[in-house]
Every structure is written in structure tokens, then in C-alpha cells.
Amino acid sequence: MVGERDDLVALDERSDAWLVGRSRELLAITQAGERADPGRHIDEMDRLLDQARQRGEERMVGQLLRAATAIRVVDSSTAEAASDMVEEFLDHARRNDLLVLQADAHALRGLRLLLIGREDDALSEVAVGLAMLDEKIAPDLGFGSRAWHVLMASTLMDLGTVLGQLGVYETADQVMKKANRHIRNGAGSHDISVHLLTRTRLQLGWGLRLERAGDATAAAEHFAEGAAMAEAIELPFRESLFRRRNDQTAAEQMPVIGAAHALANPADSHIDRMIRLLEISPPRELIFVGIALARCLEKSGMVEEAIKTVGAVQKRMHSSPSEQGLYLCLVREFTRLSEYGPNDGGERTVSALQLYVTELEAQLSDDRKSRKATLDTRREHERLSRRHGTVAKQALQDPLTGLPNRRALDERLAELAAEIGDKPLAIALVDLDGFKGVNDRMSHADGDDVLRVIASTVRDTLRGSDMVARYGGDEFIVLLPGAPLTPATAALRRAADAVNALPQDLSRGVTLSVGVVSLRPGESAARALARADAAMYQAKRAGGNDVVAISEEEPEPAEETAATP
Image (cartoon, rainbow, N blue to C red):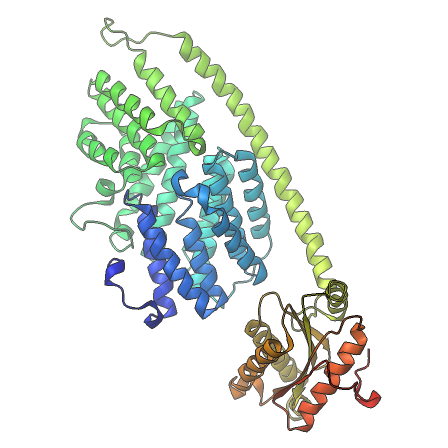
């Protein structure tokens, strides 16, 4: 385990893998429910994220943004201020077409909304995330096969967690089982531990809800399943990233694991351990541990102590807005224990309050069915909307490179030209040097590979707000909104250098000739493209692998060098 912040060397000396690994360690601390100062871990996570932003590799930045978001939506003390981080994560995933991280951003946004009491909005976020993952998704090997499956599992677990807290247990269980299939594809000990921990929480919450509904038999089955998962976590826990003592079991260190064993089989043998775990429990585990401890005390005949335990937990919880369903389980437990009469020799009395709780549970059951129906409706709506959006996107996308096509370029250029004023707009025409020779010497399939590699390289080199479009053949157009001519020229020089630096087996020796201009006030798009084309030919005549800019003061290009509109 890496040491604390003060022991870290300069972050710019660390590898990308180290940054991602350290972020996982910090997140593991919060996932285990350690009650240390969360601000300290968030501060370090933000330093890691800043370093990732400086390096600019979008997948690494996406993973660090996920960790920085997830560490903030653990409890309500940090969730309120997490909005900006959630939105940055979602925007980054959308902009870079990282579908799995985009779905996870919706899940984490849903968790945040739950923590601030907005359950219906949280349900909508889960519906969006589930609809995204309903699509047939090819693994993004840019992450690496194992890392991609872990991200898929983490996203599904985040979605399942929100569903569990919303009381939609059946769907949550289906999502968790789907996560298990990805866990089996090479996940390490820590990922297995997180998965088992998350599923244990789900089983305990489900069991407590079934008890409220009066189905003690089904509840016992879920408690038994939770205990089985708690037993299964022991081996991977020893090699996980969770902070732990090697001389103690997971059940002795992790509140929800200890609670699973105690709820499945209440006994006085659990009491000492549960008392210790109660002191280190975060809010959600606090309810599980409090109820489990109370049942062990009750089993041992210490009913008054059980009542005091549940009452103390109630005071600590103060009906957290994200845990209404579990809090109601706590109220039910207090009511049930309080029904022991003081002089009845342990016999229970039937109270009006118990009848009220039974009726209330019937109403809540109807609400859960309604919530499940709402989720299914919103999920299907989102699925259809995405399908329609995919068709619309395909109409604006070049099928070979995945870049915007000529139609999308014309629409975007018209929008930017209409807004021209104080904000400059740079336009570049990019032509590939030596591309015809690739097709002649090799094959058109090899030529297609070169086009894809170069398109991706240019796109990755420029800003997210810049547009790189395929203009036709081996020509591309770049729009750089807000960029004056000199910075735009420098940005395109970096793109040309990046292509020139590609391995020979990827680029086949192809380089870029680029012409750059600034759109003049009142100038048509066709005229600006003609000037960019003239500048590009200057770069070609100079030998290629060059960027030439034509300033506003230079004369109009000759007609024979103008691009065909």
C-alpha cells in the first residue's frame, strides 16, 4: 500500500498507471467506510486529477474523473458540492465518446441526487445509464481488455447501488449479476471484493424490506445469501486495496460483512464484534450493524440493551434523505422491540403502531411497483431516443474515420460564420502528402487504415471544441473557434508533427500539408475555404509536411488554386 500524501514524490515523475492505481487506493478507503477526514483524500485525489489533465490522455483523465466523482458521492457531507465534478466527468465522457464512463457518470449523478433527497431525478439518471448499456458494446481496447471489463463492472455496480437504494431490488439484482460476468473476465482481488461487498449490501437491504412486508421466509433467504457472499469475500479481501489488518478477518473489519453474518444467524457470539463495528460504521452500514447488533442482544435476552442500541442509531442517522427505506427498517425494529411489555415475561403486545406500519408497508409496496414501472418506461424511452440519435449521427458521420462528414461540416461552419464578431474563427484545409502512393503500392484497405490513424491523431491533438471533418478523399477541414491565426497555426503544426512522428507501419510515411486562414467579417465560407486551399498548395509546393497561414492582409488566391466548393 502506498503511503500518505507527505510520502509521495513529485507527481510528474509518476507513471500513468501509478496515477490510476493510487486513485483506486483512495477510492478503496472510502468504499470500506473508513471514517477519516474525507477532505484529505479528496484533496489528494484532486492533485492526481490535475496531473492527469496536464498529460491529456482522455481515457486516463476519464478514469481519474470517475474516481474523483465517486469519492465525493459517498455521503451527504460531500455530495452537495460534487455537482461540478459530476458534470465535468459526464462532459468529458461525452466529448471523447467513452460510452461506459458516460453511463457511469449518470450512475454517479444519480447517487448524488439520492444523497440530496431527489429520488425521482435519480431514477431518471439510472434509466439513462441502463439504456446506454442495453446497446451492444464492443470493448474499448484503448483501456486494455482487463481494465475495460473492470470499468463495465464498476458502472453496473454503481447503477445497481442506486436501484437498491431506490428499492427496485429485482432490477438491481439483475444488474449486479450482469456485473459479475465482467468481473469474471480477469478482475483482480480488489474488484472481486468490491463486487461482493456491493452485492452483500443489496441482499441485506432487500431482506430487511421483505421483513417489513411480512415475508420473513424470503427475508431469511436473502440474509443467508448475504452471509454466503460475506464468507466469499474473505479470501480476496486479504489481497485487496482496502486498508486492513492481516490478523483480522473481513467480518471483523468491515461493518456490512459482520452485519451479514449476524443477521443470518443472530447470536451472542457476534455481540462484541458488532459493538466494535458500530463505532466505525458509515451511515448505510450503521443501520445494518445497529439492527444486527440489536437482534443478537435480543437473542441473548438483553431486550432493553437492544432497544437502546436501535434508539442510539436513530439519533445518529436523523433520517438521512438517501436512506429513507433503510431508516424505515430501523423504525420498524425499534417498534418491534418496544412491543415487549415490561411485566409480561417477554411476551409481546400488539400495538396500534404495528398495525400502522403494516398498512404503511402496503402503501410503500405499491410505490415500489410504480417506481419499477416508471424506470422501465424511462429506460425504453431513452433506448428509443438513443437509437434515433444513432441514425441521425450516422447521417452526419464519415463511416470510415468516424469524423463529421461534409454535411456536418457545412452545418457547423454556417453556425460559426453566423456568430462571427469579436470571436475569431480559424479554418484549415489538410491534405495528405504521399497518400496516393500508399494506394498504388499496397492496397485500398491499407490506405483506409492510414486515413483512420491520421484522422484519430489529428483529432486527439486538437482541443475538444475544435472540429475535424473529412472533406473528401484524403482532405480534411479543421475549424478552430475562438482561435486567432497564430495560435491556430501553432496547434496545427503540433498536429502535423504528431502525424510525422507516427510509426512507419501506421502512417506509411504519409505527412500533412496544411493551409490556415481566419474567416473575415462578411466573408463566405466558400471563399475562406478557397483561401485555405491556396495556403495548403503553398505548403505542398514547399515539399509538404508543413503548415502555411494566409493572413487577412494578403491578396486573394488565384482562381486556379481555389478549392472546389
